[in-house]
Amino acid sequence: GGAPMGIDTPLVDNEGFPRGDIDIYRARTLRKRFKEIQTDHKLLEKEIEKGLLEIAALQSSSSSDSKSTQTNTDSINTNKDNVMDEEEKKARLAPKPKPKFDPQTGKWVVKSWDGSVAGVTNGELRSFDDLYSESNSALAGNAGRRAQQQQQHQQHTAVSSSQQQQQQQQQVQQQQ
Image 1 (cartoon, one colour):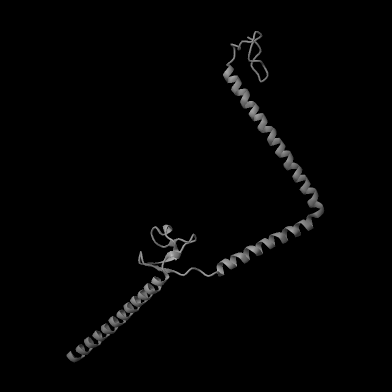
Image 2 (cartoon, rainbow, N blue to C red; image 1 turned 30 degrees about the vertical axis):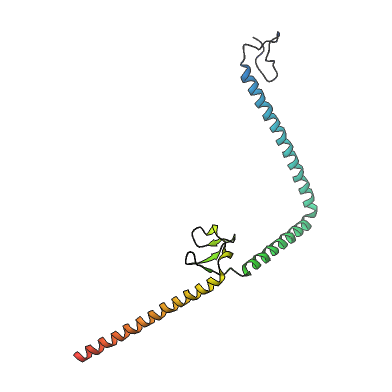
């Protein structure tokens, strides 16, 4: 044997042959990993030192300029908040897309955020702007007429049922 294996001990004997008392492959792998860890440690030390210097600089400047720094920070934050509030108000007050009647599906649909058709199956494959506006107005008119007809039918049904009730009441009175 020779000296026990360490980081700096040679892996070959005096004659240049690999030492038989150590695992050369394992020794090289461990040495490589040690060097990687050592490099990472040096980089972390540099980052920590840099951070400490920044903290020290901030503490020294904040003690002398604490009031002016706070005022500047507040005004910057206030300006950012005002800009965001104005943009949000504009977006909320902007005209919203009107629904259109889709003749292909027979449903009313709206425009999605990306310009596609929302509210129907495979609407993402179609463009909301390509829906025909002339046919929409005609179909919307038809849909409106249908709704009006249904309402009239319901009213007629209600009137006829009330007439039936009156007739039944008259018959009951005649029988008495």
